[in-house]
Image 1 (cartoon, rainbow, N blue to C red):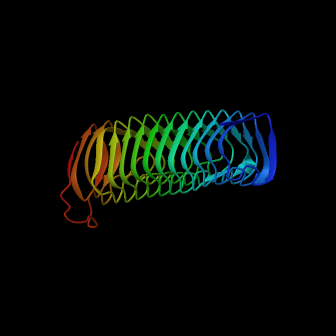
Image 2 (spheres, one colour; image 1 turned 30 degrees about the vertical axis):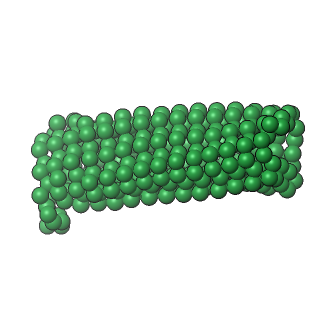
Length: 280
């Protein structure tokens, strides 16, 4: 492996098509496609200023490094990439990628990040300003994950989330095969049109959660005081601890509330089979 230490690069494609490189204390100045079409790259204590850094790259590992705002769109169309203890201050990272591992990373401007990706694992990562994070992304596992940004993981599939905090309007919209454990989800219109969503010991806030869902499961979840008009036109099995403000027109299944329900609304607009059993 070629060791490149304490050097600076700029211009167009300075390390294009290179392979088996160890970059240490390297700065990639304003440029484009600096490591495009490379493979087997390890980068330590590096600073990335240019765009399109890791495009069409195979097998790369970035540690303790910085992506500044100008390095937007730096990880696209690549495979088998790992970031550890990195600070990422630019949007539109990770697009059409497979095999992403993130540990102890912080994203300060994560708009439109992680689109159309697959095989993703994140541990102790946080995302700010993260509207549309994870859209159309599949096969995801998140642990100790934090997001502030709306529309998280819309249209995502095969997602598992543990011990996390999602502050996100319209999160998990039209998602499929998602399970969330021991987490807090805050934001209006949670998971409308989701299929096979399972929430275990989660706390949910925000108005009109979990409507139009198919095969929804809740196990020992709690609801905030603003989580009103829940479950409209959903089929579900739910056990809920504590108070629920209001439940409206669930379509089928069962809801068991180990507390009080402020209001149960069953009106002429309920849809067939209209046989949901509510116990409170």
